Amino acid sequence: MGTSTQDAQDNRARDKSQKSPAREAHLKKRVPKGLRNRFRPWFITWLMIMWIILVGEISWGNIVAGLIVGTLVVYLLPLPAMPVTGLHVSWHKLAWFLVVFVVELLRASLHVAFLALRPKELPKTAIVTAPMRVSSEFILVIAVTLYNLQPGGAITDIDIANRTLTIHLLDADNDERIEQELERVKILEARMIEIFERT
Image (cartoon, rainbow, N blue to C red; front, side, top):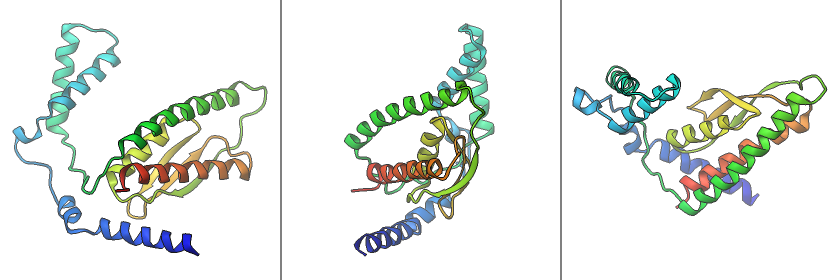
């Protein structure tokens, strides 16, 4: 009974934060007008590095080409503003989470490798839905990215309004495997809330 009451209070608090005037004003912001407002040097540098990695060779020509491509992307395809109001980071919990995440990443990689190499047919797959009830779209993006980095499942659709993820599972041979994967999503949700939303 106490847990249900606490969950209801948490949901009401998230709904209230999602409808706050500051967040609504932020969501109404347009992409800044004017070329100077679109200039993002760190993003251009990152795109240049990605370009060099794709080409596979470091040279002055590739560096210049990467800078040109990065600049064109930034100016011609500007990203919209993303609401990050009310974001509180628990740094020690984030550090511990990264350690746990690397361990889980290695374990998931070994499991997928075992499925691919074992002398049996591949397991059944499944499409499931799971909640990701975080208050911020920015945190939702982080959660989706972290989940997709781990082998074994991929998020194919995001219902932002209802905070629901549609997930394709690689190993869904039985109900137990599906429940384990849903539990992974639930744990990720709890960790995101603990790291970014608890004050």
